Image (cartoon, rainbow, N blue to C red; front, side, top):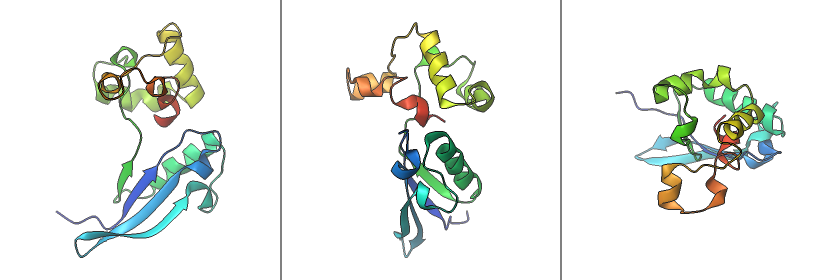
Length: 145
């Protein structure tokens, strides 16, 4: 197997000015260790905006332009089962971009599906019992885009 030579760690944010809050550490393997070549805000990349929706688009482009790279992202990939309206996780993920065109629409649909209640993922209950910061609709909705 060919060794990957480009590695990026992304410290994610769903904040209004996400471009200034999302950090990207970029590195490469050197003699069995990770050598960090750069650490910068998403907004510092050429042409990257600061506001949430365009910043998320810029982040998606950054990732898509590097198909051979390895990425580590610090946000949850899961949501409560009640909100997965597909037979499999793969079907849900593949339909996500066309079903939810924005973070706002995703949040709206989640709130409608739950009667405006904030649901927690099973992992949230196990790790941080009762922590409202992990409820769908308060933190993860932006992070899932």
